[in-house]
Image: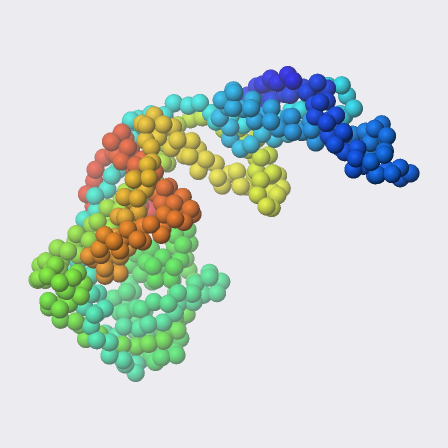
Length: 441
């Protein structure tokens, strides 16, 4: 057999395989001999069919099967021996003039190659690493929310100025259907809350989304509107009232502090505020890291130049998956996934060049931290090691969870690498300023 590579461009090639009779004749003959005792041809007893008739009836099919086995194995070994780093899998090129009756059988496979490129993690950039602080306004608001949450809800017949109103915002056209609790200070304009005054359970109040809140992004929290739809959204939404309460605020005492954080952890209002600030800024730090990682990804994608075998990949996308894609659908899918593929290649190059590897201990440590954080959110601040490791073992026995957590560990290690290499500019901001920066506004 003769095998060679023919370059189409820097990232696309054709593997040309020429198969001759010697490559498969022995296996075909063996299969024919095995077939003879089982062959059935009209006019002959089973097992007594002449060999030439067996070859005539079954020979072509056996030949095709054996040749394909030879080709598949040779292709696999050739890819390995040439150390070809492929994107997708080889695609057979259809030859309209191909004939199984020729002496030499020529097969062609198109392949897409991972491009060679230079990655400069230390390139000059304008990336910002945000350090988000919890200001007094945010902390005071959280204290009040805690007092309401642990206070006594007093049912009311009608909505008053100080009521908390629970209900559901709906708008069928925009797919809005979200249950929430609202109060007077939620809205930008006092006149909006006046619409609710005097209403009862079961009543429906209609408001318009345009300028409803001080910050349009609140539509994402209150009505679960996507960020793409936030700006300029101008539709009427109905709010169906389901409960009306006023809150008798919980007293800020040791009993409340112990309920929140465990016995003796917090002993005063000042310590409560400090704890709120610490917890909030830890959460903000995670959000800031996510933004930093996204900003670094965008920078590297835009500034690391390489060609992809795009035409090959579009054809390959038509062949994979349960539902075969049309050329038009493959075009759309490729456009949707191209940036992700580019960063996947950049990520792989960054890990290889920095010798970053993921060990089972890395995965176990990350999972342990994640479990402890989740337990703390549900009030389990001091779980035993036995409890935590039991949960960790169950989580890591699930292969889907292992894949998901492994991706997070990779992201965490890459983030630390990018912080070191990209040397972003540090900027301290409030949470409101961070939100504005995150959405480019």
